[in-house]
Length: 282
Image (cartoon, rainbow, N blue to C red; front, side, top):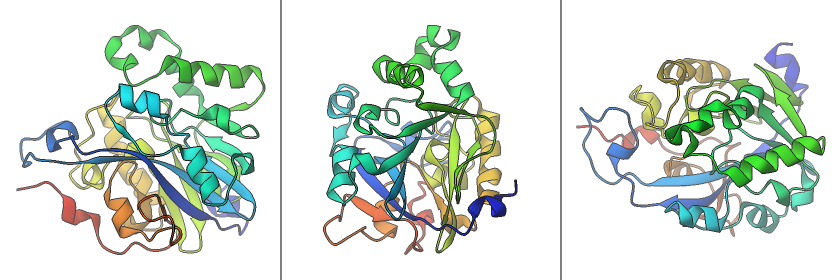
């Protein structure tokens, strides 16, 4: 099936909900190589995303909870499920929840979406439950209780395993890229402004792509770098690519509503401004 046929004319509104943050990260923490970069503060935000069409909500990632964020040294701002409800969408409205990958900051809160079907790439769950987890470095970004929540959902017939390109709804396709994790998938969503790609951790910061310099948590550098041109091809333009952790998202996209400033922004409208101004270069 072609990507165009997968749309079926359906267009979504997209919101990004910021649920945690950290001001303490430095430039050196966010790139493999910092030889040509000035060091200094480079904050990181944590998001979940929602694609909305009528009463149907497709959530991209579940975020994490306060205990997990605090234990790992990050500032928790709000529960993603409660924030979504505050914007007018009860957790019961979520019909599908895409797990872009199973790291601790993306896999939490599954139990708060009782009607959702969970979509995970089969290579990701094999990695998170296999012999790779014998290595502390590879195991560190995962949370065992969250991983177990996926297994419980699997036994309840609520998990769909993806492979390659997968259409989960009209206008929404998942695309495997790997790199950051073996089963990382990005999400392509048709909106009124065109096809937006939610890159998740295939692109932590816009600067990772612009400098071809990966984020240092990565299992396959070549796959990480080769994902960039793929993402550009799936998006209608560079303005249609949404980085997974870049605070600039909150400043170049408008608030979802007058009450959601600093909480949620909408991504189905064009950005105002360029993320390139934040590049930490000499």
